[in-house]
Figure 1 (cartoon, helix red, strand yellow):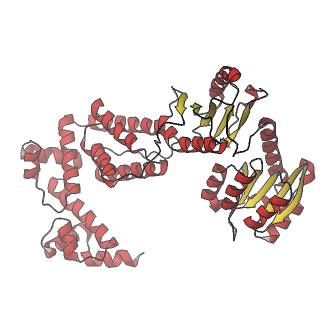
Figure 2: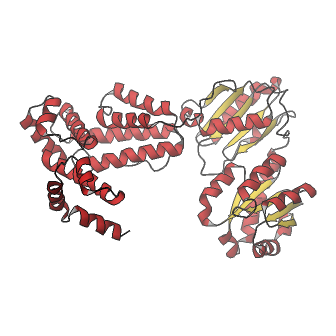
Figure 3: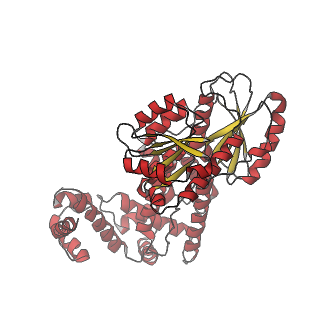
Length: 468
């Protein structure tokens, strides 16, 4: 009989779940209720519980805090979270902490009781049949020389781990998280275990087999946490479908992500916009090395790529140089680099549509970036053509053909666009804004602004803020 504890700060929800669900049909029994995390922990101290259903948003102690505590104290406890649809970020955190499933409360409102319990019951039975022997997290490993972990980069779907591959009496195996599982076997059985798990790579999507050494004299908790950290950071960059076995030591220096510096991010952006990386392998490899050296977390990397794409499309989407599409999701650096390769190919294709040489195309792109990043300076077509070693007349012709505007038209356009940002997002004076976008005469700036927008700067600010 699976003993169940229901934790929710809403009494009606607790009573509704307890009374309406067909527990008996799935060999389950509700043995207790708790209105918050602290009361749930008190209950767990006094009575055995196999399955805990917990809300995430509760007073006193949240469901996430309860999960962290319960996983440490009762590692064999199965946890299912109760949530609303808008709690998606909390769901992800709960699954990362080891929840075996989640129930959206609207499911209960639609009376999908039998389906919900069937899913949970199947999940528990699967785990019970595979996790036959699990040492305490505080226990020190003295018997096992290596630990093996299968880790999938695909976090969207529940994995079907090849647990049935091995069945040694002294073997231990359990889930680290929903996307990773670890094994250890006596030295005499290690070779067999390794080859069986290596075969299992074919059955799990985007999977890597970690062979972790220097694991003795460490607690299982330390080993488990090390695998989690490695998976979240280093493995993100190390994953390669063509090299799915990685041998790693717990003694190796920490290569986990550091906080990026602004100058490092700016360097990557400059390389993206100002070097011919799309056409030359050496520049491409330099750009890739810069990305990898930062070891950005997935969220940081997504933010950087988003800013690059937005700036590129802001500058070039309406020109013959082409628009690039954003990568919408990725689970590894391998996928990001594949996107960069595809982006390079699309930029090359757009470049090939023009009659100009690659050298001229790169020169125009460089001129655009100089104007974009040095708005306070009054850049001229004459000055830039000299800097780029191109005749003024030819530079002007190339610029208009590629950018769709004359250099002077583009220069005014980009300055007015930047001044719009200042007008809406700062309280600085019109004169201050005019200077920041390269105009020393406020009246002249206002005239140019009205020619391009139909409004004076003060009118644009008032109208824009009035609509917020």
